[in-house]
Amino acid sequence: MAEWTQLELSLPTVIKRHVEGSRGVIDYVPPPWADFNPQEVLGKDAYSIDIISNGTLLENRKLGNKAYCILGSMDDCDLVYKNQLVSRKHLVIQLNRYGSLLLYDLGSTHGTTLNHVRIEPNKYYILNTGDQIRIGRRGTTSRTYIICGPEDADQPQEEATAESKPKKKAKTLAEKDDQEIMDKVKKATAADYYDTNLYFDEWDDYFDREQTKEENRTKRKQKTHTAASLRVDLKRLCQEEVDTLNRWYDILKQAKEEGLVQEDGAKTKPDTLVKKIQRKGLSEDRTKFQEKINQIREDIDYHKKLLRLTRTS
Image (cartoon, rainbow, N blue to C red; front, side, top):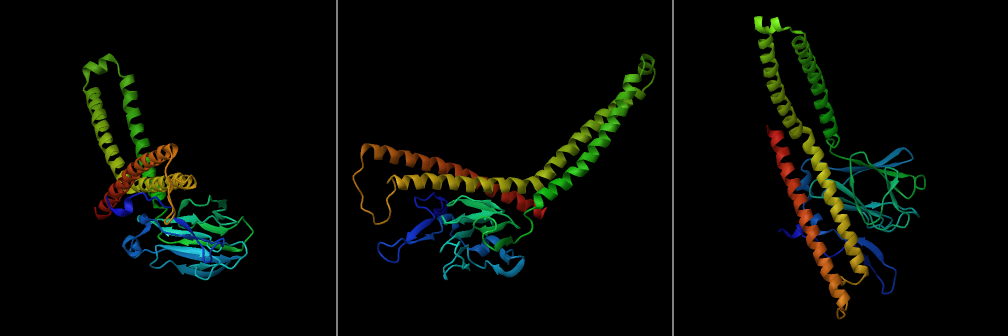
């Protein structure tokens, strides 16, 4: 198992104190799954962010070769926003290994909104092209950050719509033909049945048409699967991976609060019986989540291979 695939026992955030006893600043520590070369993931495609203030475009900031960028009021942030509602390290925009951008609020004081909906802190949210990020509640700050990038994010829906239209038309024509044949069969008399071959010819044509229609339906299903639904399935699987990571970090955060996971350099105390049981439970949870996320990632890789095959065919 590659090191980056293993669920870590550390959260993506850490408190850095420049002076002993000070409040400190929450900083972002990229998890192992976020340690990679962005160019290998994006290739020629690249994300950028439109920074808009009161309807005026201030800047289009390229994300460049960094796998993540931090927005905050401190000068060392990638996106600096000097505003009293902006925390020193406010939020992170993180690229994952599958080419998706993730939004992560670093427990900021006034929060972050995504498409006018406030997000929970310390959780990852998948971003799509055109998504709008704002600081604080709506109307409290003037800047909007709009995600710009690869324009194939909405392709699954368009492809699915394009595939569904001809299918609906073909189905209507086939039903019309079938209905005409069945009407003739119902109206046929006994004499027609025994004295002519017309009934048998049309009945044979009916079954031949049914077989052909079923073959065409199967081909259409395969085509839809390889073209449109693969992207939809990939989007669903990527969301499942993010949801699994968020649930694991929730468990890990609670475990840290209960003292089940020791901070680096912290003095260890002898475990009580309760602590031993709790640590065992945490280890079992980690194993379950590891198995689940491994399966999700295998499914993602499988679907991406299929998608590459459809592009070359």
